[in-house]
Image 1: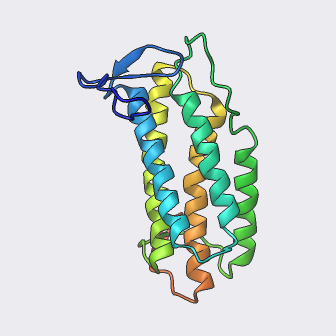
Image 2: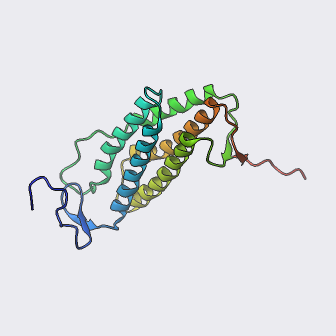
Image 3: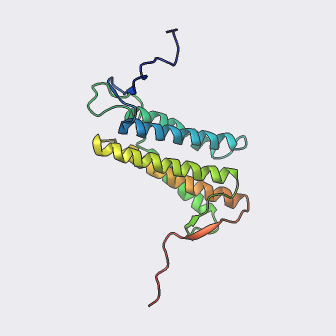
Length: 193
């Protein structure tokens, strides 16, 4: 095998390496979670590539992608592993994302939350794609957490991420003067008896 090659052939029988050493099946809960986190990160990359230069979301989205790479090292490592990842956990990220969401709400004329039909324009639609992929990643991380504990800050991070993407989709629609394609309010109105 040439030096520096990506293909090692070590996974040809359906297993892959995990953090700290050891191997698991490629459909193991840990690998499923990592795959969906990786897909979420890629979807954010597509979103970033669609933004105009020097867009005000750029730094925040890049920070999220960096945090995701760090936390994936933790998700890849079983709690029983002797070698732990050196990458930082996203301990402060949930508060930071909550502040970003609060700032977005202040910029919107209508802060009532509705279920929306995803669309608007390419950027807001991509925010919704990231939102749904992040929700799937969150479900996979929750499944993994039942088998092997995941750091609480990781669970919080993926939960806040999908919320943030919903808010960014709304902000983009508002900024472009587009009408949100609303389905219904988050809280259905009570029927009058």
